[in-house]
Length: 88
Length: 289
Image (cartoon, rainbow over all chains, first blue to last red; front, side, top):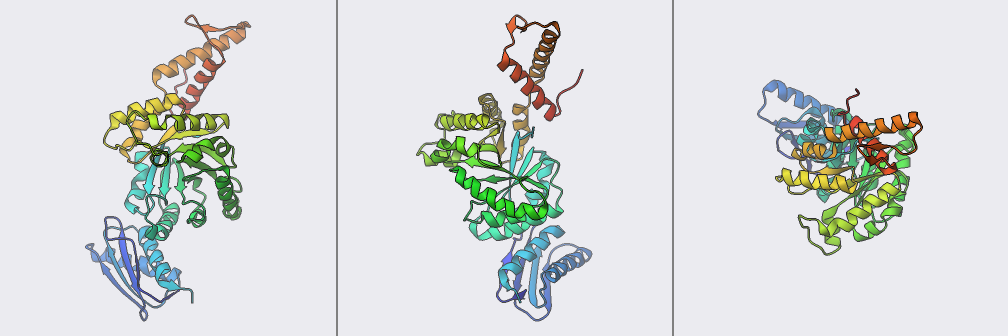
């Protein structure tokens, strides 16, 4: 998928995540959460996996989360990409 | 017999509620993609529910999805169904044709899963037209239950919701009669005052006496109360055992007419006793002697 416009999905609420995405070069990720760095690493991995599954190679991604589980992160990334992207 | 005393609505775009739904042990979880999700969020809710069905333990009750009407996103909603989903809840059904359209759309998604014809439809009737067409809707393909939506129905007839429920009496009776004539379940509307659990219990006991098999819950605190009202009491179970025992003894003795405590046991009484036992077994409250 090619990211062609800014979009977001989810919300910054308990057990949820707000994922914002916009066009970029390579994957540039920013994570906002109060969790320890080990959790941050896992979040980053989950988001990268979700982007990879959708074949997103270039995007600027921001994730603000409050305890979202992997399936929620994946869902929010998927929804944001669907809103922001077009098939290559 | 599927136990459908309680059907707990869970907003399809709320991960927190989806993850905790099973804790309340409803007979059915309804992941709601219709009224609980605003038009701008339908797509992300659909993705969230799709992934919940794949990755979240939703408990051991039935799992269903309330889809949007055909032509308003319903066709996209059903694409996320997997093997865990036993039924879809169709809102605002007004005719058998509405159901037939959805049943046809379901065929296309069942085929690859090797589940042809398996996904049931719970048709929700929420308008005067729907009530008058209830007998046809009940006989439409895949319909395993008729459900009632009182809020929209009352608006449709220009009425007003009251605690006594006079404004919905005809509709509820019609839905029960149509469902039972077709051999399917009748499921009652929500009790919208979530703080009034005593009122919920009284109303649910009335609902059960009218012939409903279950009702919707819009708050987890309602589930236990609904179960209590729809589950046979120990006295009812004891009475049913005595009725069935008396019938069996009468059969052995070759007696035509059988009575219990001086009262004749006719066919409807026997049928009621059998239904109570079936329900008690399904609810796990029947103890063999």
